[in-house]
Every structure is written in structure tokens, then in C-alpha cells.
Length: 134
Image (cartoon, rainbow, N blue to C red; front, side, top):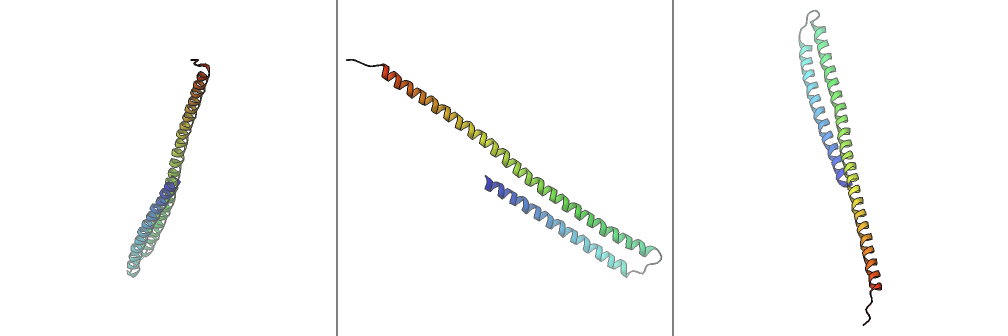
């Protein structure tokens, strides 16, 4: 069962890695889009405060993407840890229940063995008290 738990924890790591990759890929795509838009804005002929507003918008977009990526990474770490904890807790619970069942079975067989031994002793005692003189 420990091997199964290790395999399940490995799969949790695989899922987490895949999700991290997806988040990183999406973040890269968003950064590229922002960079293209910024390049277009830089090439434009701006008048007055429009240039400052465009630069501020670009900075805000970059900040928003960074914040979103960091939140996603933190969420993935929490998810990964929670899944790992659940797998381990499930294993511990099932192992505990199996231990109880195995203990109950052992106790039942020991009780059966004591009963069988007592029965055998009683038969031996009965054998000794019954004698035929013929």
C-alpha cells in the first residue's frame, strides 16, 4: 500500500507540474501580447498626457499579469500540498482501519484457539475418567 501512496503522490506532483507549466505558458503569452501592444504604442505619435496614460496602462497590465501569475503559483502550491495531505491522510486512515480489522481477526483466532485447547483438554479429561473394564 505504501507503494500505491508513493505512486499517488508522484501523480499529484505530475499534475502540479503540468498546471505550473500551463500557468507559465499562459503568462508568457499574455506578456508577449502586452509587449506587442507596447511596441505599437511606442511607435505611435502621442500628444500631451496620452503618452503618459498609455505607459501607465502598460505598467498596470504588466503588474496585473504578475500578480495573477503569483496568485496562481501560490494557489497551485496550496492545491498540491492539500492533495498530498489528503492522499497521505487517506492512506493513514485505511492503514489504521486495516490494523484494527487485522487485530480483531487475530484476537478472534486466539479466542478460537483457546476454545479449541479447552475442548481438547476437556476431552482428555473425559477420556481419563471413563474407563471400560471388560
